[in-house]
Image (cartoon, rainbow, N blue to C red; front, side, top):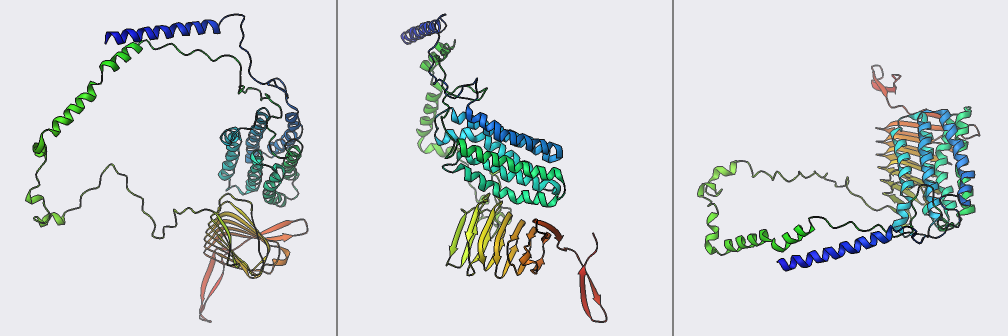
Length: 482
C-alpha cells in the first residue's frame, strides 16, 4: 500500500512540474500566440460588410418608418412594433454571422436561427393575448402572419418568392385594416409602411441572397459583441490537482468495504437454506376469503399511494389522437384535408365533380381553386377557407373562429354548432341563403363599392317566441334585447 502511494505522489509531482513549465511559457513576455483565424475579407468586428450596409439602407429604413407610425397609433400596436424591431434585429445579426462563416450543419444552423424563431414566437403569443381586442386584432394578425417570412433564412433556392408567399397571407388582414379604418390616414399609412418593409426585404434578398443565405461571403466578419468562433492563442492551462487527491486515491485503494460487507450479508442469507423463509408471516384461515366469507363484503385492496391515478379516456378515443396531416383526392370525388396545424399554404384544384371535406385543421389557410360542388368544414379552429365558387353549399359544423370567403357564386351557407364564423360574400353571392343553428358570434360581410370595402352584419342569435291564440300556433321573431 505504501509503495502505491509513493508512485502516485511521484506521478502528481511530475504533473505539477509540467503544468508550471506550460504556465511559464504561456505567460512569457514578448511572445504572442500566433493567430489562426481567417483575416476578415468583408470587415471584421470593426467594420460593416457591404451586404449589411445594404440591409440597413433598405430594410432597416423601411422598418423605422413602420415603427414610427405604429408608435403614433400607440396601444398594443405600438407595443407590437417594439417586438417586431427586436425580431428584425435578430434577423440582421443572423445574416451577419452567416456571411462571416462557412455554411454549418443542420444542428448548428438551427442554433444560429433560433433567436429569430423565438422572437417570431413572442410576436405570435402577443397577438393571441390581444385577440379579444377587436379594434387592433387585424393589425396584430397582419404583423404576426407577415413575420413568418423571416423563415427565408433557412430556405433554398428561392428565398425571395418564399417571402412573397408568406406576406400574401398577411395581406388578408392588411386589407381588413384598410377596410375597417377607411378615411383614417394613420391606419392607411400603417398598412402601407408594413407592406413597404417586405417589399424592401424582397429587393434586398434578390440582390444579395438570391438562392439562399450567402454563407461565408465576408469571411471572418462578425457583428459587434460576438466572440470569434476561431480565435488565436493557446488555451488556458488546466487547473492544478486538488489538495485532497492523494486522500481520495488512498481511500479507493483501501476502501470498498461497504460492497464486500453487502456481498457477505447476501451469501449469509442464502446459506440459511430452508431457514430463509422463517421470517415470513403465515396466512391463517381467517385471512383467506374462501374460508372467511365476511372478507368478500369488505372493500377491495387499496391502490398503491405512490402511483398517480390514470386519466380517463373518452369512449370514442378521438380526443387524444394525433394523426399526420393529409391532403388526398379520394376516388376522384372527395378532397380530404385533415389534421393540418399552422399550415397557411394549403391549395388544391377542384372542379364540379369534387366535394371538399376539411377536418380538424387548426390555425391554417386553405385555398380552393376552381368551382367545386360543396365544402364541409368540420371540427376546425382558427382556420380560413377561400374558394372561387360552389355549386351547392358550404357547411360549417363543430368549429371555432372560422373565416370563409367566396370569390364567386354561393347558393347556401350552413353553420351548425359553431362559435365564431366570419363569412365574406362576393357580388355574385349576395342572394345566398344562410341557415344557422346552435351557433354564436356569426357575421356576414357584404361588399360595398368597388374599392374592396365590406359592410358587416351580425347574424341574430336570440329570438322571442309567443303563442298566437287565434291562429293556434307559435310565432318566433328576432329579439330586440341587447
